[in-house]
Picture 1: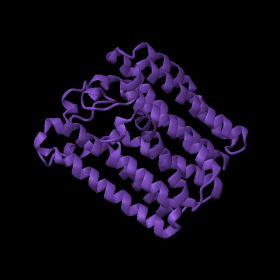
Picture 2: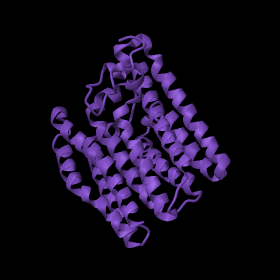
Picture 3: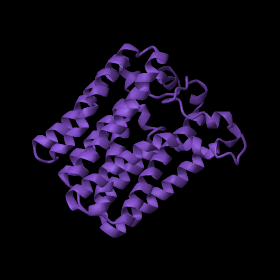
Length: 299
């Protein structure tokens, strides 16, 4: 593989996983449309580019840090964990991960500054917390079980809530409650994806929930967060914050239940676990998309 090979760029970006950023931005667009009825197209495009840039940044910096620490050499790579493998295969190009990550951070920050100019300082706290998550997640937050658990979900919840704000100039309960869905599901996504790498992660000093308290406790928290995601939607509807069409998001319960059962059954059987990691990805993408569809229909 040569330096001109696109895979050196696309690999650290983890392009297939960027669908998650699209889903979260779309949810923010949906809440904005539901409450305002119209959005500025330029702001919509910038929100999407900013969300993608933030996701690319955390992916690429994670790839670079895992390559630098030697973690990539000890993980059992799966389609959903263990990185892209591009940097270990091209060690002389390891800096590509860092460069891509920093460029993506710069793009996200530039877009954030634009929206501060347009809407004022109220977007600034979300942007600063999001930036902090991006640049500290792999190196520092993964050393703390609670922060490692919550940071991914918080980052993508802020992406959804921030999209709503830059399109409307306001924060609302509808946007906040809708953002709870990616908060719980994205935290669950990263939590379950840590199962194949427990021993390897511990070897480089990480201390996420699965390491600190064991697989059983980690899977219990995974189940609680699944329930919390659906309860958030139901409670939002029951209190009038979300429309009845938002209950479409509950349809993915038919995926969630067997995914949880399969993860528990195969927690230490990585080949058997892989199909359930895939179902968890589908669950994490489809649930906010269905919620967004419900909000668009309700308008």
